[in-house]
Length: 235
Image 1 (cartoon, rainbow, N blue to C red):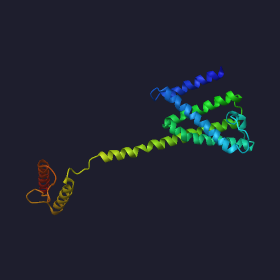
Image 2: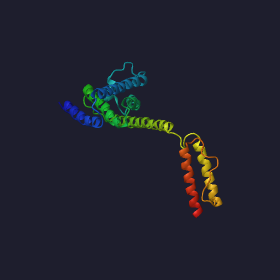
Image 3: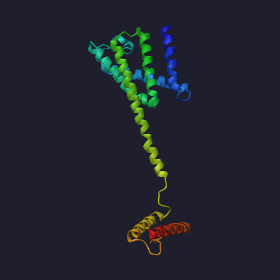
């Protein structure tokens, strides 16, 4: 009854954190939890096979769920601690691929270790080892922080691509056709006339014309240059 009540309380508060900011999709979330938990135990089993297989002829699931194997007083105990921490680091890489959002890593990481805690409790009883608690707390912290960092890094990589696409679709400045090049000639002529004191008739002429533009655009440029020349001549 205590275990059922604890599960109910945890999943009640965890559901608020998981679903308050996204559309309710229980099938997707349950699939992600199952996939992350399966990968977590798969990594743990493979690492124990590689590291402890040469010292222990017959490995069993007790090395995953029995809290008594984690110890600070023996070499095998330290190896088991290292395996658990390595499992957390590698699990963070897969969690970033499964979850794909930094704000979900805390909830999924805590859920993964909470399910592991329930499995260990069911297998051998309530964990009474300080080494087990310290290892799992540190492992959960590493898994969450590394998973968030990987997700943030992946999310930030999408921004430059979108900026390049927007820049590629933005039309170049300076008008259509050859208008951009003629604008440079007009600015140069205006600067030369300003330095020389302007024309006596109150207008500024632009050599080279405005090629590639419509007659209305050329007339508008002529009006602007004449007005500017008049202002300069009065000054």
